[in-house]
Length: 563
Ligand SMILES: CCCCCCCCCCCCC/C=C/[C@@H](O)[C@H](COP(=O)(O)O)NC(=O)CCCCC
Ligand SMILES: Nc1ncnc2c1ncn2[C@@H]1O[C@H](COP(=O)(O)OP(=O)(O)O)[C@@H](O)[C@H]1O
Ligand SMILES: [Ca+2]
Image (cartoon, rainbow, N blue to C red; front, side, top):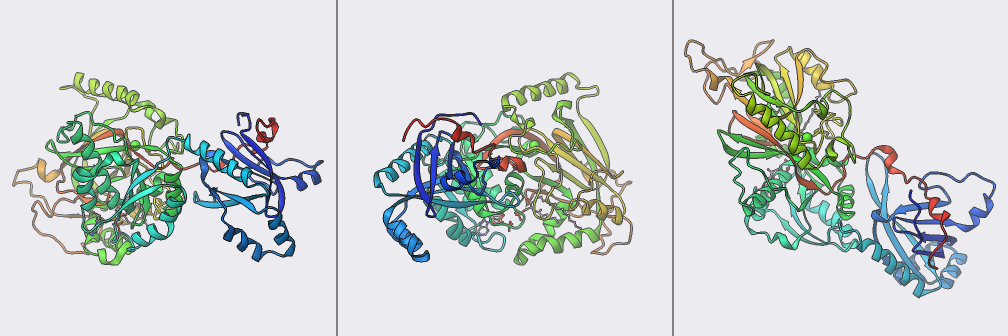
């Protein structure tokens, strides 16, 4: 940690022990005086929080508040006589609320209260800490919150009111809350009505489907306001300046899980409060040059499309609908024919099998969209110059059980490493996973590997490509010859378990695309990745060692500038 001058340093009391408290521009630290004397010959620990020395990054302070009389008295009531005397001697106090990391990427809000005999000193501490917090421009002050009361286990409203709103209140964030009354309420409100100038961000309380509504509302609003025609697949899109926060209250919560590392409402609320920012790729999906939808997580045809279609009929089951539909779809064991064409990403963009996971501060995602745009233009150039010959595009025709495009890992509680563990959140590419026709047992092996440490791509029937664009054409669109009738849907291995089809028509011989949990109306699609089109109130998944400050003791090394 770079040594910085202290802004403030005082002898205060915490839990009736004398502590030296010091603040510089980046760290608030405190250590017990008595214990320090006792361990003069001992080793000073390097960790962020030892028994004697504590440090909190200023950027992770949630709030500092004057500690009210009644809190003080409550503390006194709990303690013994000595403590009571102590609190009479030091009646003034302030409380710092800060982010504390717990297990599995979860954050909690902890409090530390410092007491003093001097009211003025406490006021000074509150003022100086607040001054430092106000310098953090990335922190939101005003938010627009949409709650889906019916997402997941229908706990969205309660989660917001009980876990999130109190934290926003403590951090001094004002929030306008809209509880949605119908599907697409949030999307439509954002598209046309909401006065976005009033807000520093939009918060979505719900699942991936609800996030998708917010995404569509915001992205469409920004394109409309800037005269961008979304029906043009090659239009240069305008990034959204408002960040989106996700309070997970859905069934899969993949977008939250893959960007934060957990689907925990309190953790998400704290990432919003500290003003995190995580850029994210968005795929635009078109059919015959008509805009269909945007996707940030999974575009899945075949298996995942069929699971979703079936699960929609079982919404009343809540999140369990996916398990039931998953088993049913697995047993159906359908495969689908078609041609997938794709424009591969440049070699320096890594490979879906390179085991380089996208983590907080990921180097691959650090490129500004403009620089990635340059590479993109090079690909476009290559594509144009090669027209008629062997272009940069590749095409694969085949029989597929699943075609998945994962623009991020798609990690979620069901699959903690995700569909494509090395996919990047903001690199301008999507990982195309092609699962060819195989036996049920092989497909089961492939699925099970999503839940353990084995490589789900290490099968002869699975291939994976990192791409910037792709197109899919189902076979029934390619073939019109009656001499080559198409059966539907195709079964592999055993005889059909679910309803057998004997004739083919458009509706039965194709699957559907699941687009972040919404069904697309067309099977033939064109997809382009729009690099870093949106930003979330998140920071990507933290490496474990990022959870510790380097050395809180460095703050003690410099002389105080203020007392
Ligand atoms: C034998 C064990 C097999 C386990 C396989 C697990 C593989 C799970 C990968 C899940 C990827 C999820 C990608 C995200 C999809 C969501 O957008 C979508 C909608 O979410 P929500 O709005 O919150 O409901 N969820 C799904 O499509 C669920 C897929 C479940 C598949 C079993
Ligand atoms: N008030 C509402 N009534 C009905 N549907 C809604 C409402 N608000 C949002 N939705 C829709 O509910 C769907 C599922 O929402 P989501 O929050 O993702 O829950 P889940 O993860 O359980 O699918 C979304 O497609 C969204 O458009
Ligand atoms: Ca990506």
